[in-house]
Image 1 (tube, rainbow, N blue to C red):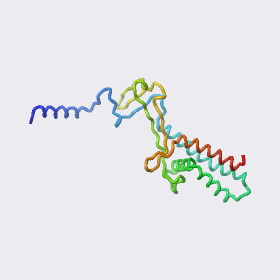
Image 2 (image 1 turned 90 degrees about the vertical axis):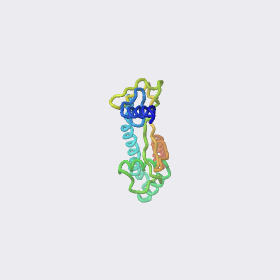
Image 3 (image 1 turned 30 degrees about the vertical axis):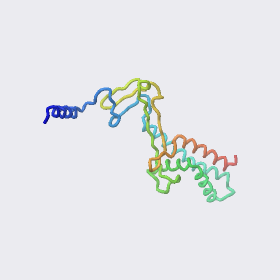
Image 4 (image 1 turned 30 degrees about the horizontal axis):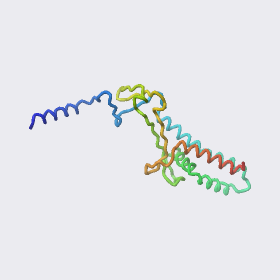
Length: 190
């Protein structure tokens, strides 16, 4: 065995034994990150899930109040027309599936949108000298202090069971609210 090979093996063994991570290198695969001044992701997830649940809850309120304006047809016929109207808006069907999945820990019936969908949210952090003012490593966690909120972006997508993006979650809520307005004006005659 050559002496050079032996020394190389010993160097790699010693390197492997040293579990301390070199300074100024961020291990993105196995580290935890905290970004100062940015709402934790789990809180943002709770809030957007609640927005979907409340947006979909408008259905029951509208169905009841709008029927009062349309008593010239039976409740059964009104409900059928109302549900068909909802199904004509893609965003409302996605809103229904997200909201009902959150409320009931999944869907017991066929998805209204035709696909099994879930929310997929993440923070995207731009790390560079121009976006981050400080980085600290404490107890295996990295603490970032961004220079401005522009360094962090929240992405919120609705994805299907193939992991394909179906819609932007914030846009879906906006479009769902617009759909409720259109349905309200149609059934209230305004």
